[in-house]
Image (cartoon, rainbow, N blue to C red; front, side):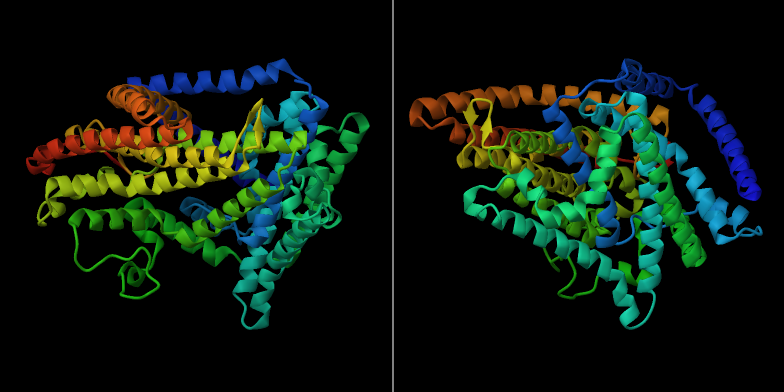
Length: 578
């Protein structure tokens, strides 16, 4: 234990010193200083004020909703570790940690204990973030909610390590033993599906409009969710001596999981070395390093998706290249998407007239569509697989017979399609689970369809416009724009991302002015000449305004062709982030 504490203390001292030194250098630049100020202001108004306010109280209806919502979240957290396999890459070590720790006389459980110590900061921050949302449904003071969320988060972290090491070790075996890795996930899925079906049948089937609350409280599904419901009640409603007893029980259960991890003693060193090498290669070569070299060659097989035609327009090939580069892990993402859609259809079919049902549907629906809208602001900073990674390779691209407008259109369309499809899925989920009655208004099926048909062109147009502006900025001012993949970490960078989101929001407002003028004329024309209902006028107007926005952006891309033709890579001072 003393060796682990010594190694962790040395790690904290060195990383802290390096981060402070790096922050001092960055603060000499105004954009980093402004970003740090914005990040501190955001943290204060979003977290510190809630911490100072203490208990926020909770009504009976709100507490009931919080209980079901937190139970569902913990179900996703604990169950998905067995259903979808290990989260991320399992137990991950950095290359420097491997060099410093693996060569010392430390046992495997020492290394895992070091990683657990290292995760404490993330667990505390996650507990603070979730406490902001959960405390309004809790009867406990804010500090106790944070403590309970931290303990349950630590339990989930150890459980995820146990699931990761166990399933990976079983899958590496041969024969029937490897199939055992799928048994827990299959058993959980069968129990959930059977519990949902029995709960719906117990209320007269789908035609009877079953209540979501009643389905969740059906005997089988309630038994499956009972351990997670106990954890949710511990976070929300446990007071006094009962809180201490529950906290000790959670710590004891986490200790049992930790003992199982130590006793099973699964090997992870070889994989940790491979993952560290992959991370180093990704920093140097990008996402192509995630696949073996022979896998990067696209072969003509029926299983290759998306499939590139042998002939066609050049911009489609650029789109294909960018989409494939983004979607290296498309199979797992597809499974997650199917799970989300299943949840949406289940909620849409099981939400009845109960007050809790309606609240669950309203919150999930509006939050899903809100996330889809917020993705417009953060998406261009997250999905940087466009000109911002290809500008350093312009000497190669300009040697190919590619027109500038085709290249620019393909670069913009790739991440636009990926982000827009994610927004469409969130919108469909939100429209399906909205309750049948919002306030005094009855939400009919035609209005749900109108929401979806409005969101499809609107999200695409806004995202297309934002990616167009980001790429044109990188094309005209490459030394000012940040090139490279992904988002950098740090409080200062977080503030810069906030600045970028505000700038994009202002851009959307300015960009919508001409489209809004055309849309107003379209609304008046449809109402005067055709007399269509709002459920038809709104989607039609959205398609017209989106066409105006996309057309204007394509015109800007055509103008950018001249800049592409005269672009001299050797004359630009580029700064590329890994």
